[in-house]
Length: 410
Picture 1 (spheres, rainbow, N blue to C red):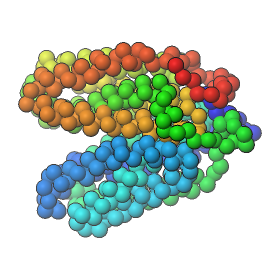
Picture 2: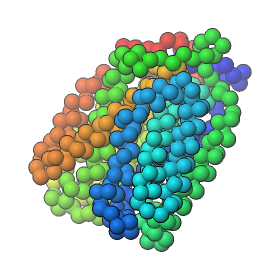
Picture 3: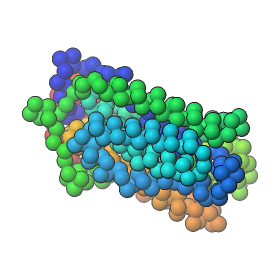
Picture 4: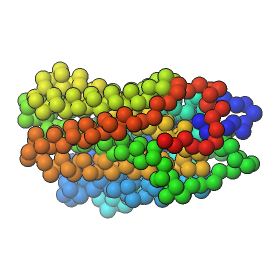
């Protein structure tokens, strides 16, 4: 890695900051998918169309694609200030939703979605500043896994809270989570950074967006996230529609999506550390694509329910691990002065993949073989790209601290 230890206690990790960040990151995703499992009930409660409720979630990836890169660059210039603005936007938007009516909910979601890239883009920079070099893959994995935990909590809890106390109860409880998580992270960030670049007086110089995009590995990683993260988003959106024609019912598909998400949380938490400690990142990425192609092929041919559950659980486990695996590799290659811009670019492509592939499959829903074939083609095209993923030596505390300050390019 290219970050030296300016702290006399080299090798220490400030987990309080990293855990506080993971909690708020989970809250951003919880707020994002609030209305997804209760779309019809929310539309009836507000007296609006289902499409109108859909926009409450769709605004997030759309604004992320627009704001991710400039906000990443802002994070490189004013890290704690930009992160504080993201925290404030998340809390303010969550509180604003408490006011009754669809218009306030939409305004709250827009404000939260503006703050989201400021928070999520911070994952690599925060790990670089507060985690010991050997612990950074674990820190990034924890921050990434928390995103899917937030999605799972919201998906499971929203229908029950809606039945219990309506939208008011959902908004109040989720706003409470946002306020608590935001205050805790702001308090934790009072602690000074433990690590910085090997630059004069520990000062980092932000790289331009053009400079960062010129790195071949940034473009390669961006394409992998476009395919991998985009595939996962598309599957969670359209798997039911694609699976029912082969004899699976909605309950079975729901179990499949739930199993895929749970396995993905476990994979995102465990696989990055395993891959980094043994230099197995390329193998993990290739395995995720091969298993995804097998699962999609089985879906096209009419998989039995046990095979469906098994294949898509493994697919979710490996696919969701791709995000922290790639972010961990990017953290090793980018200086802290460009970590925000790099994370912004990579996460922008992941969200863009979700938008593009979801819309493409939607256009082909009346031609099921073509829709699944498109996804298989994307996976197969990504395999040679993943094969170019750099083979990295197994990380260790000593080797991590001995790397030079210049990012590695290939």
